[in-house]
Every structure is written in C-alpha cells, then in structure tokens.
Length: 59
Image (cartoon, rainbow, N blue to C red):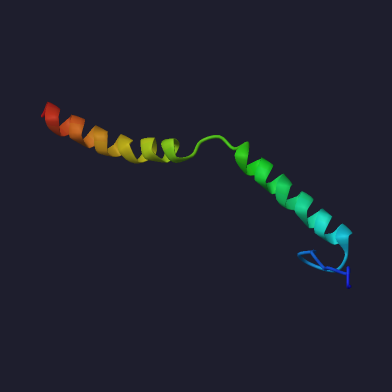
C-alpha cells in the first residue's frame, strides 16, 4: 500500500500550505472588520432621489 497521499493544495510542502492558509484567514478577518456595506450604499443612493422627490412635492 502507498501511504504517500498528497493532500496539499499548493505544493508538496506542508509549511507552504499553512502559510498561505494563514494569509487567507488574515484577509478574511480584515474584510469582516470593515464598517459599512450594503445599507450604506443604499442610503447614499436614496438620498438624492429622496431630496428630488421632496423638493418637487414642496413646489
């Protein structure tokens, strides 16, 4: 039987896979820590539309 099963993703070296995995985890943590998102974009898009509707309703 051959127990040399290569389950590494990037290379035969386990250390390289681990380093790349850690870097990807850091990037995921940085993205999750960001403020804003869909709600902020929606508000920015609705403000001009709401102001135009409000001004046209007043006149």
